[in-house]
Image 1: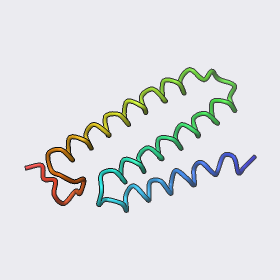
Image 2 (image 1 turned 45 degrees about the horizontal axis):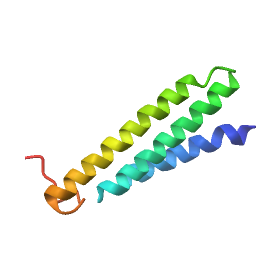
Image 3 (image 1 turned 45 degrees about the vertical axis):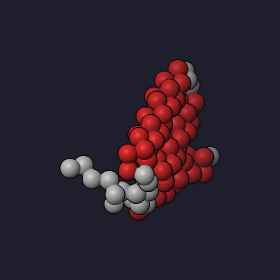
Image 4 (image 1 turned 180 degrees about the vertical axis):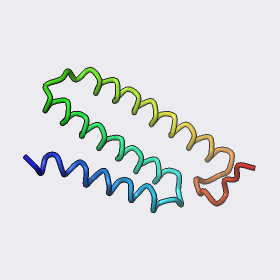
Length: 94
Protein backbone atom coordinates (compact mmCIF):
# COMPACT_ATOMS: atom_id res chain seq x y z
CA UNK A 1 0.00 0.00 0.00
CA UNK A 2 2.93 2.30 0.63
CA UNK A 3 4.09 1.89 -2.98
CA UNK A 4 0.76 3.09 -4.33
CA UNK A 5 1.11 6.36 -2.42
CA UNK A 6 4.84 6.90 -3.00
CA UNK A 7 5.07 6.08 -6.72
CA UNK A 8 3.06 9.10 -7.94
CA UNK A 9 5.13 11.40 -5.72
CA UNK A 10 8.39 10.03 -7.14
CA UNK A 11 7.05 10.40 -10.68
CA UNK A 12 5.90 13.96 -9.87
CA UNK A 13 9.41 14.88 -8.68
CA UNK A 14 10.92 13.32 -11.81
CA UNK A 15 8.48 15.35 -13.93
CA UNK A 16 9.50 18.53 -12.13
CA UNK A 17 13.16 17.71 -12.70
CA UNK A 18 12.49 17.11 -16.40
CA UNK A 19 10.55 20.40 -16.62
CA UNK A 20 13.34 22.40 -15.00
CA UNK A 21 16.22 20.79 -16.88
CA UNK A 22 14.59 20.77 -20.35
CA UNK A 23 14.40 24.39 -21.47
CA UNK A 24 15.46 24.23 -25.09
CA UNK A 25 12.17 23.44 -26.85
CA UNK A 26 8.68 24.60 -25.92
CA UNK A 27 7.17 21.27 -26.97
CA UNK A 28 9.30 19.25 -24.54
CA UNK A 29 8.41 21.66 -21.73
CA UNK A 30 4.71 21.30 -22.55
CA UNK A 31 5.00 17.51 -22.53
CA UNK A 32 6.71 17.49 -19.13
CA UNK A 33 4.09 19.93 -17.83
CA UNK A 34 1.32 17.59 -18.98
CA UNK A 35 3.11 14.71 -17.24
CA UNK A 36 3.16 16.75 -14.02
CA UNK A 37 -0.57 17.47 -14.36
CA UNK A 38 -1.25 13.78 -14.96
CA UNK A 39 0.65 12.81 -11.81
CA UNK A 40 -1.24 15.46 -9.84
CA UNK A 41 -4.49 13.97 -11.10
CA UNK A 42 -3.34 10.48 -10.12
CA UNK A 43 -2.42 11.66 -6.60
CA UNK A 44 -5.74 13.50 -6.29
CA UNK A 45 -7.64 10.41 -7.43
CA UNK A 46 -5.85 8.19 -4.88
CA UNK A 47 -6.44 10.73 -2.11
CA UNK A 48 -10.15 11.08 -2.91
CA UNK A 49 -10.62 7.32 -3.06
CA UNK A 50 -8.85 6.81 0.28
CA UNK A 51 -11.21 9.29 1.95
CA UNK A 52 -14.30 7.95 0.13
CA UNK A 53 -15.11 11.31 -1.47
CA UNK A 54 -16.84 11.88 -4.78
CA UNK A 55 -14.88 12.07 -8.00
CA UNK A 56 -16.58 15.27 -9.16
CA UNK A 57 -13.58 17.45 -8.28
CA UNK A 58 -11.27 15.17 -10.24
CA UNK A 59 -13.49 15.61 -13.31
CA UNK A 60 -13.25 19.39 -12.90
CA UNK A 61 -9.47 19.05 -12.58
CA UNK A 62 -9.34 17.03 -15.81
CA UNK A 63 -11.43 19.68 -17.57
CA UNK A 64 -9.06 22.46 -16.54
CA UNK A 65 -6.01 20.40 -17.46
CA UNK A 66 -7.43 19.80 -20.95
CA UNK A 67 -7.98 23.55 -21.30
CA UNK A 68 -4.39 24.14 -20.17
CA UNK A 69 -3.10 21.67 -22.75
CA UNK A 70 -5.11 23.27 -25.55
CA UNK A 71 -3.86 26.72 -24.57
CA UNK A 72 -0.25 25.49 -24.55
CA UNK A 73 -0.63 23.93 -28.00
CA UNK A 74 -2.16 27.13 -29.39
CA UNK A 75 0.77 29.14 -28.01
CA UNK A 76 3.15 26.61 -29.59
CA UNK A 77 1.44 26.89 -32.98
CA UNK A 78 1.45 30.70 -32.90
CA UNK A 79 5.11 30.74 -31.86
CA UNK A 80 6.07 28.40 -34.71
CA UNK A 81 4.11 30.53 -37.20
CA UNK A 82 5.76 33.78 -36.12
CA UNK A 83 9.31 32.61 -35.37
CA UNK A 84 9.66 29.45 -37.47
CA UNK A 85 10.70 27.12 -34.61
CA UNK A 86 10.06 26.44 -30.94
CA UNK A 87 13.49 27.31 -29.56
CA UNK A 88 13.49 29.65 -26.60
CA UNK A 89 16.67 31.33 -27.85
CA UNK A 90 14.89 32.74 -30.90
CA UNK A 91 11.93 33.94 -28.83
CA UNK A 92 12.38 37.36 -27.28
CA UNK A 93 9.76 39.20 -25.25
CA UNK A 94 11.11 42.61 -26.24
